Length: 229
Length: 233
Image (cartoon, rainbow over all chains, first blue to last red; front, side, top):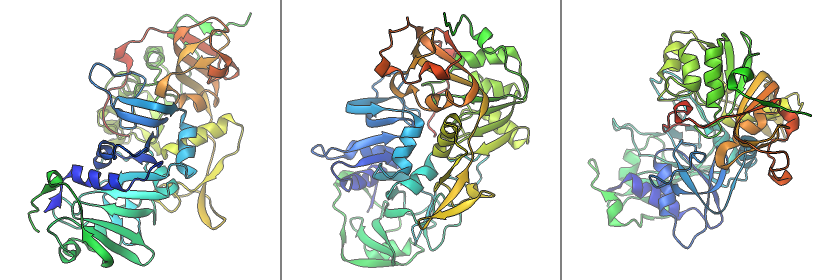
């Protein structure tokens, strides 16, 4: 079995601690806010100047002056604040935002991340990706473990232009939870029904298996049959 | 009596000259001075250098100005807007220059200009493609790159309420680039939803003090002038 996109979001949400200030990227990261345990206070930051962001606005209830970084209409939670771009990026660059959950195209064994230039793109765009990757201490990557063509995305060395060197702390995929350590990648958890060997066979960089490595605790609704497992 | 109000966007953009550098506020719809932009399209100045987070969307506002071939250079963090094929087409033909700047660096370069600084060292982008040709320095063991201030001839911003003294108040996520941009240009015009009497904005709610603003123009919001909403940053 492997995890659905929502399953990856569910898993990373478990690891965001009480009182954390979190920036969510586009794609799988956007789903994370749905899965924060209800008894935990986590504050979501949007780089266009929002802290304490709630969910998407219901149709008909959109505030035209309130969008997230993906330009979607959003809501605010009690205790939220709004501010300008320099303040917002002071939060990011200054290390005040404690976690960023970002999608990636490639991650290397040393924590290098590539997520801003896609192969075949016509116009490059960087947005806030580099500010986040350089400024936020805990960069958590969420992505499918391999490309659409089955190629590994966790590599010995990135082939695409880097967003930032040595920035990733943890990688959450449909197959595994992997920690980036100074000694290389450590496999912490694997998807239900998989094992460390299967995960390694889809990973270019070598994985050390943690002493307490275990099967992920994920509700069945977030699991799908994995074609190659 | 000081009176910074103008009756129309047309008057507000009248002095824009060919080759001018313009800071353009907004992030998505919130804070985008769409009606000043439409007036600028009618005004006709060309070879403009525009500083904005994105490249606009569709064929209105900034997207329209680019579509009309009036922009020779765009300084932006996220110009790869899926809705703006005008920019993409001109860029692929080499008919528009792009200076790609990380979003936080863009904001700080503008802030830096308004604050009278000569630039700053930032860790963002050190060691990446976007650091090419930039001065680097190791400070307390960390790599930084030098970024220069970004000054402009004009800044067009959008606020919620304003008064004849140029004091501005924004609501929700409108502040974004508007606050730093209003400090960083020789000539600053704010498009506002509501012109209010002096004193109506509580001093604690003035986000851009009037000292930074040359003119305010009250407009009625028109959805046509807003950016197309599309996922992308």
